[in-house]
Amino acid sequence: MDFGIGFISTNIMLPILDFFFRIVHSYGFAIIALTLVIRLGLFPLSAGQIRNMRKMRITQPLMKERQEEVQRRYKDDPAKQQEEMAKIMQEFGNPLAGCLPLLLQMPILFALFATLRGSPFSDINYTVDLQILPKEQIERVEPQNYATKSQNIYVDEGIHYPIAAFLPGGNSLGVGETTKVELQTPEGKPFSQIIPETQTSDLTPQYSVIKGEDRVQVKADGSLEAVIPGEATVQVTIPGLATKTGFLFIKALGQVGVTGENGEINWDILGMIIFFGISVYVNQELSGSSGPNPSPQAQQQQSINKITPVIFSAMFLFFPLPAGVLMYILVANLVQTLQTVILMREPLPENLQKLVEQQEKAAQAESRQALPFEKKGKKKEKTS
Image (tube, rainbow, N blue to C red):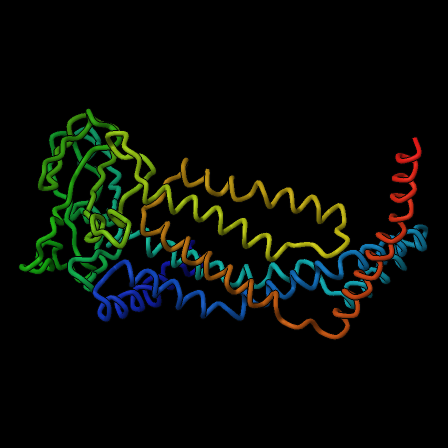
């Protein structure tokens, strides 16, 4: 179950991507435009999340103080304690409420991520699972059509079709039996017939055996021959139309990994990963910066904020993504950082502003109490 991600990708993301491509005739700019539209569309949800996070950062010290007081006062009365805790939650708000906007926007962001990982930015793979049986057993098997899940394949700029891998006689074969993997639309139109004659990119499907190499033989045209009983898996790969297309400083939108096949460093991908880590750090500092008197929890969060960008950046080194997907992630995070800057400058509600002023006064009072001790220390040093 994809929670509607496939539906959102097909019916929302791809039409928007095609719309912008027809305007700018660049898949790179189309990715940026698509990312901006989605992020701006999700602004009300992300704004609610940032505002709630800002509110909880201000109210958390007082809320924690009130909760500890209730726990002490009603330690022998669990029912009353729970009632008073509920009142505190009603007054200050539930800290988990900020997670709801994030959860609501996750399917859309996952759909955007899935869209940019597919055609035309990446090669598309189909896996065809085969069951090879002895001749005497295959005679008792009733042939049934077999088809993989369809995927959108771009055959020209802005033109794509849902394509599935299809076996007319089913995926159960007898030893010595032959069949052929057909690529076609849901209407039954062969993949080779929907490729425009003017298309210069090579979209020829590639066939390989990724499991049970000794049990099945596959030819360049997709023809299969069963050799030995057992299970086998054939992979069909259709090249992505824009995998080798460059954009600005990016050599190829479909390029994957910091290092190339010959060990050379892909500086464009490395630069995006480093810049992404910096943007994550800045965003966390903006949204998680503490007040004048940070609590131990806030100080601990600040330490985590310094480690998180390193972890996320390193993740892209061990789990590499296509350059086009990295560009989307970087642009989306920059937009998120800009939104955070704007929202953190919003005037606070009157009750929260008073609370901030009280916290600042308390911090100043503590600093004044510390000053006389510091002066005495200095006098002792002079007289000694």
